[in-house]
Image 1 (cartoon, rainbow, N blue to C red):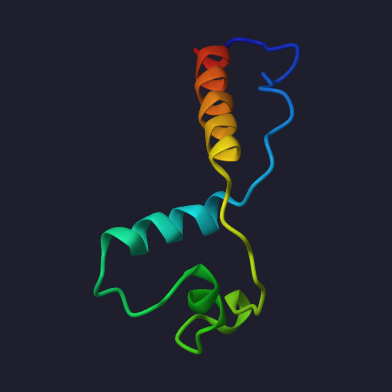
Image 2 (cartoon, rainbow, N blue to C red):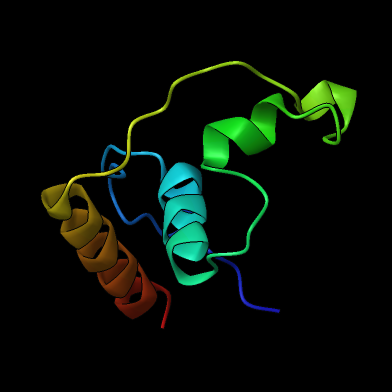
Amino acid sequence: MVEMSAAPSGGRSPSGDKTEEGWARYIELHHDFPFADGDAIYASSLNLPYNQSNSDIPRMTTEQVDAWLQYRANYKKIIA
């Protein structure tokens, strides 16, 4: 076992909702998907009650996506 003085940190994570962006990209690739967007999934009565919500979450901008990808790549280097 190796003792660590502090857990590695990638710094402050960028803004943007990765889940909403992920659903949007998935739905764009699957034209027969029964929901229009991630918000419709969260609001659906088919969703478990404790996961249901009614919110209007915007998609990430290109800059936010790029910042998340860079953050993830940097974090992987730190962990390695």
